Image 1: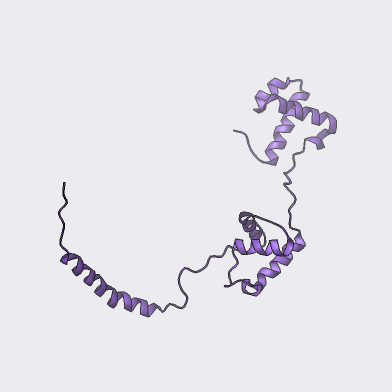
Image 2: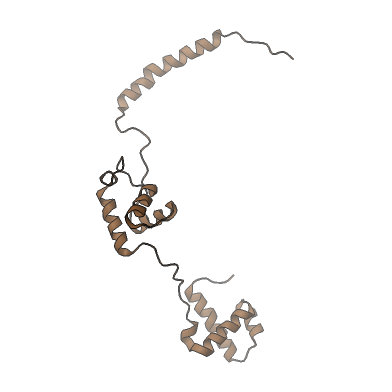
Length: 170
């Protein structure tokens, strides 16, 4: 199993160069380092053309973001003001709402999954609406469960016992 990461990659490349300088063939180097022979050839060629600097691994940069840092800061200010202030009902920012704000304000179209990453970058957590009504009175609910619910269950039982059963015909 190959070690991963930039340091492991540098060690592999340096080993390839050292073994090549000792006079080892590329095929043998590929077996020792556990890489394919074209990779060994590529590393040796890069070293010959650019020296030690050419074999330094670099972290992948990725695509340039569509939204700028200034726009991110402005988005953060909008989110801080609250969803109701922007015109939404309820004070919760979800990915769909933030996606809409980004499209309206900056004319940038992101999928909701990426909006979640943007919110994480802005150190916002995902918000979910409450499933229970905040106006619900717990005492009244408990009273209903203890007094009303048992009487409803009893009346249902009586009705089901009074029904005549039908015989199935074969």
